[in-house]
Length: 169
Image (cartoon, rainbow, N blue to C red; front, side, top):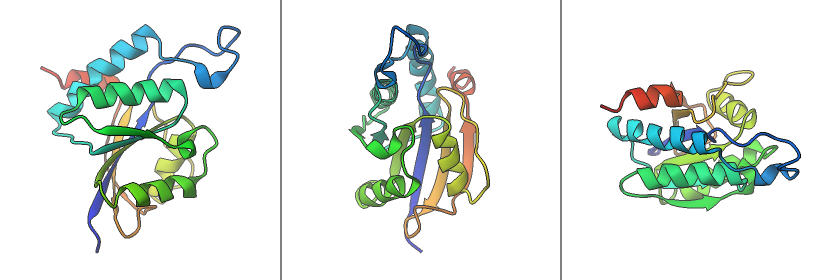
């Protein structure tokens, strides 16, 4: 049995609404409230003794901003890289390949992405049908065997940002 890989799946925080202000959906940023809420939930991860070695993120602005807030709030601060596979419509196998590549050096990876893709990916990791719903800014931990990073894995916990914020004294 290979070493366990901890996968922290993170849905991007609250973003600006689609519409005429953002005709290019890839450029929608987090709202000020989304930024504040997510930044204030990251200390909850620290309270849970979460350590993340490396962050993989969708290249879309709202996901990149969420990844930056996540990394900035953690100690030590993990490096971030963008992968196209985490963009909406990304292929499951491409995400698994990215996990295989980065888990050679890092055993605790965060993946920042979008719904419904992130929920579908989580379900596939757990050998479940359908999708697992992620609220904006929610985080879950799924552990997988390094020999089979595409699953099946074990869901350790899943928390919305409100619950993470409640963990902070």
